[in-house]
Length: 139
Image (cartoon, rainbow, N blue to C red; front, side, top):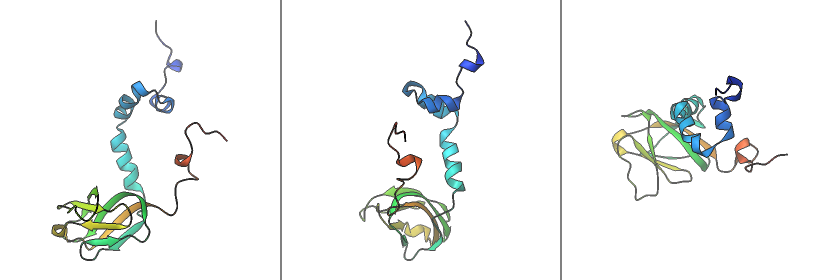
């Protein structure tokens, strides 16, 4: 017996249905990691070309979530691998360390002097957005 095309859900519907047994396969099939990277790469930085002094930057606002860090000036520019932790973590070349609030430190070898930071403002939570809704919430 063949299932009619109208009865077979496309990937969008399969993801919206959220069947746990197929979710990972669906995400892999659409290249979710690549898609997410493209989306994040197209967003406007919260702070663009912000000055970095002595391999450190204090963000203008405490970050709820630090999403992306791209060095725009210095010895080694480009996207940095984000580590999360305190002063005991020393970033290696190509890395930066976020303290979970407003401090970001870069590797001395990268000599970063300016960077773009993309983050959600801790003082402006996502409550009004779709992501801030409770699962199954209907108004």
